[in-house]
Amino acid sequence: MNGASPTLRVKYSQIMSQVSKHPAKPSSPPKVPQPPSEQNAGRQSKAYALMASGTMVSRVLGFIRTALLAVAIGSSTTMSDIFEKANVIPTIIFMLLAGGIFNVILVPQLIKASQASDKGSSYTSKLVTLTVVVMSLATVLLTLLAGPLIKTLTLNWTEPMLAMGTAFAYWCLPQVFFYGVYAVFGQVLNAHGRFAAYMWAPVANNLVQILTIGTFIVLFGAYGGGNDQLATWTTPQTVLLAGGATLGIVVQAVVLFWPLRRIGLGLRPDFSWRGMGLRHVGKLAAWTLGSMMVGNIASLVNSKFVSSATAARLSMPNGGADIPGEYALNTSQLITVLPHSIFALTLATMLFNEFTKAFQENRRDDVAPLLSQGLRTTAVPIVFAAVVFIVLAGPLGRLFAGSSSTSMLQGAALAQLLVLTALGLPFKSVHLFMIRVFFAEEDTKTPMLIQTVIAALGVTLAFSAFQILPATQIAPAMALIYGATNVLSAVIAHYLIVRRYGDYGTSQVIDAYIRIGVMAALSGVVGAGVLWLLGGYSWGFAWSSIGSALIAIAIVGTVMAIVYIALLRLIRSEELENFLGPLARKIPGLRR
Image (tube, rainbow, N blue to C red; front, side, top):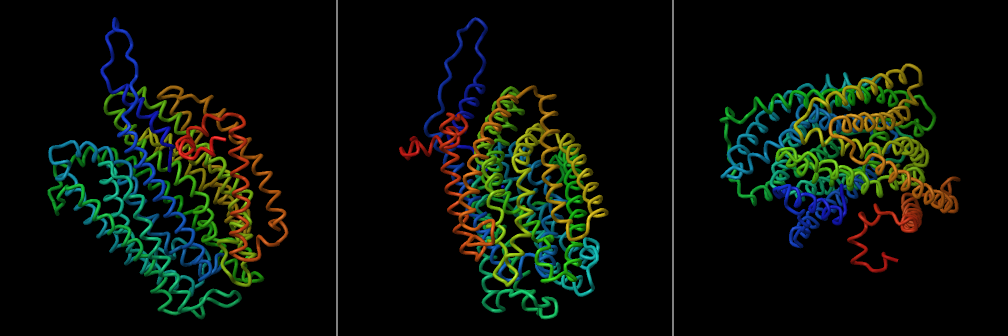
């Protein structure tokens, strides 16, 4: 889950302020556009800063949590893959059941309801009540089915592995309910323009989990490598690790109570669901739910293929530490999604409301400028981040590989996934922006069709890889497939956007990505040279410990950033000015 610069938002505000006025009569002279008020621009800048900073802090803490978890149970180990399977299922199942409805469909409905005399209190009360009832029933049923779920979603696991996965699942599946509460509360806040709380709530979740994993390491020690984790694992370890993960999600939902109360909606239990417009929402949700079902069922199927690596690892030397599995694959996704969440997702969240208002007020011509500017501005951090991940894949992998005797091998396994995953990162962000345009117009059919094509292709490629490749190579194959399908999804979305709304400045966007990509690649060459001096390609200093990997990342990343910004300034990049302009005005040295 993020951002455009304040300069970009001022430009958006100028567009919105101009088109919101009644057009002049043909005989009248054109009106001179007036800039937005400083107060309005200030509020927008503050909202953006709070959203981006919340996401940044949350992601950094998420990285700390992931690194600590690798210290506790390893990254390419039997236990890490088993726990990952049980802990990820609630997220995927929630998205399968209702994620798309909460995150996309209900926002336009809540925005409409917020215009009522009671600020949407009645509608929101009914919605929250419905959420609690439905998610409670779903959670109870899923928890009772923990064993069959684990068995269905794995391949070639032994009985002890299945038993361990089931035990973890009993503790993790209640997360489904609290994900639902968090999602509906967050969308209510977003509909009322309170974006920051939704972005900051995961910080509390990560803090709880960091504390829990730290306690685990203190009580039970760090994973040292070489031992049979299943044979020595105890019930208190299960309770602390899996229970702590669920406690974090509980806290993430509960902390939204306070900002929700400050809106003054006076929420209360309300079972009068008739008259909510659920029939209209249901028609929209049918396509969205179908899209989420297709996408998340595909994720479950793909993760089933990847789970075969866990069993294959048992017969490998060094415990198969150099064989990446589900935990390593998901960790590579977590790392590479950081810039997407900070820059692309935050801006897309803010623009979604603007897209929605533009369609509701019949101002379709405003959509293209918003989309084009958003795509070009986010290219600055997203393209650079992709190059950084490729150059620094080794030290990044080592950073999240724990401290065992096989940590270098585990780091190398994760590094190869990072390179493959990073290749599709810019296209992932492009697709996000474009798909939000369809949702804003309450068109859920088109995203469903795109998702179906991509999911079907992904599963087909994954199944083919499973049939052709050994189980030890399934995770790298899946990382490559994810990158390829990100490219294809962006291409399909682009074609449909142009066909329906006209060109949004495609040539400008492509030109921006090419220019920015060349500069990012040049900074990558310089960064690779520095990393070579630090032993990043010879098992040297950059690989020797978590601390040395972090130092290498900091040095190389800083050098690359300086070179990158200097090169963009040299070619007078307008996108850099949009991205860094407000900061440069406050720090005169940046102008030079």
